Each structure stands twice: as C-alpha cells, then as structure tokens.
Image (cartoon, rainbow, N blue to C red; front, top):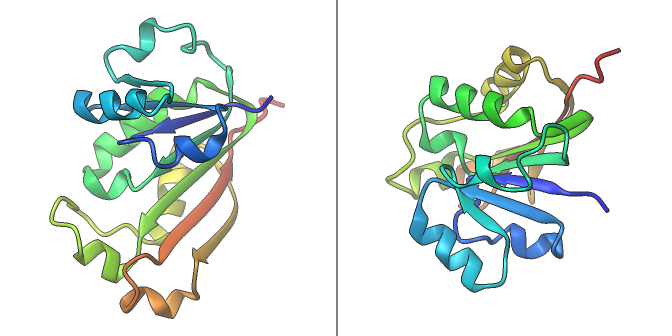
Length: 160
C-alpha cells in the first residue's frame, strides 16, 4: 500500500486523511505529541532517523504542505533534499503553499512562495514538475480567499 512521508506534519491534519498510510515528521515535539494522541504515526526530526521508517526509497510520496513559507530558502532546500532519499525513484512530491491572503494571515510566515519559487526549488532538487494548480479556486482568488493554495506535483528521478 502506498506510503506518504508528511514533512512538517504539525498536528497531523494531513496525516489523518491518509488512512494510516502516512508517517509524519515535525520539529515541534508538542505538535508530534498531539498527532500521536490522535493515533497517527509521527516523529520529531531527531527521532525519525532512528525509526524503522527511515529507509531509503521506503515512501511512495513526500508531502510538504505549508512548510517552505515558514523557513528560508536554504533550509527548505536542505530539509527537502535530506528527506527525498526516503522517496522511491519515480515517487511523487507534493508541495503546497498559501496564496497572498493566506500568507498575510499568519505572522509565522517568513517568505511568500509562489509557483515560480516552487518550480525553482524543484529544479534545484532535480525533481521533474508534472503539474501545478490553484486550489480550491482559480489563481485570482488567492488575493481574497485565505485558504487558496499553490499546489505543485513533481516526480523524483527514476535513475534511468
């Protein structure tokens, strides 16, 4: 069954929708504890490398939802690069960031990340961008609707 690595899982909102097929990592021990209290599989950044899940190629996909806008570009690249090793060749990577209104709604956001920046991150990581879209409404709504998001789907190289 497909397994997703949720990088920056927070309280486990996305993990809860993966029906037991996800493993979360977060730097915040309180968030990890909250996710575990909900019956989800989650680890701190320090714990994860010692788990049975920390095996190269063990995951079919990596999800980084509402992560990269909270950290600078170099840290985002490092975190993604460090965790891509756990995704199988040809696996999927999903990156999600808030659009303008959502970005402005959270004081912990440190930089605005749009499609151009997401594509550039993928290029630098050697990922192939397959698709990008605005969710749940068209792109123009991001200036007014807090929950409109940039969504990007990429692939890990197959090694061929």
